[in-house]
Image 1 (cartoon, rainbow, N blue to C red):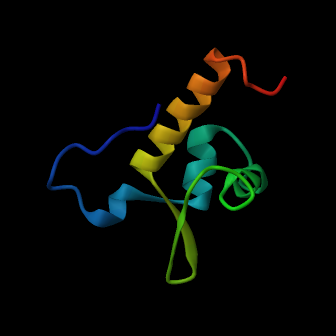
Image 2 (image 1 turned 45 degrees about the vertical axis):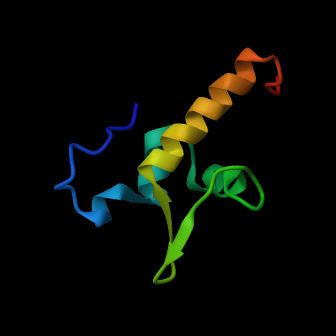
Length: 77
């Protein structure tokens, strides 16, 4: 599970993960991550200074939505 922020003293930089960091955290390839990223997929990202970055909270929420989809029987098998 992704480590959430420790508190308000965390810097904004630590709130965002690079593509490589996000892929590692999700145990998927960067290519798979790109296919899951909006507009191709449902995972939202931001682009800053030419880099695609993922907010930790967005990733946690996305994982929860994927789990909810599986519980509702809408998961792809």
